[in-house]
Length: 262
Image (tube, rainbow, N blue to C red):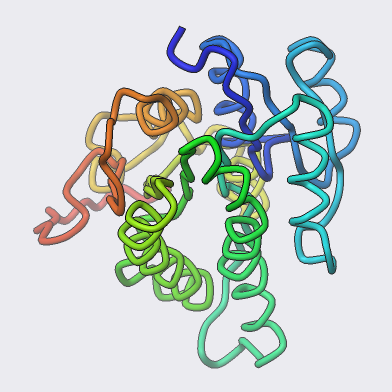
């Protein structure tokens, strides 16, 4: 097993990519802390995985002291902490015209500052174990869609943090920091968003090749499969790296026009 007896905290793991990472981590032998805001969904996931290898903490990471409490919870439950996955994020639309300073700060607080504070809180434990951090970013970090401005900025900042700490913490603390930038992933939240936009329940069956060359979009379990490399010891000393997981080259792409509309 690739993660045998490793203790891993996965934020925002009651649904979506986080839930898929938790499931795959347990399959690979890890002990996991499920974290999020949806208590009933988190309880169902822990029941599925078993209380001997999974525990649930429900709290908003932006609360004062929440990162420290999450680390303490993991250590009290499982005796140590080997890795954290910063997956929890606020995903919402916004432009320069309609995003207030307060709203902008909310994106930064959740998507950038909360991961930073959790890394800082977990650092003594991770340093003792020569552990690892995996940040879940987004391909929108490079520029972003026109209506995802504050979200994209927050993910761009996260990417810079990954590269900076990936160098600094490896040299000073023996802790690796890497990042996955998912592209378009079929999570529960994404399906709800598209249906709410009026695209219809069958939108996923009508994907333009311009956005999904393979004819489908990525599944959360496929992001989780990639996460196992970064959470295991297989990547050795590799740190400060950002890997884009999309089905086409995000930078430098010359897309063909596609007249098919969702």
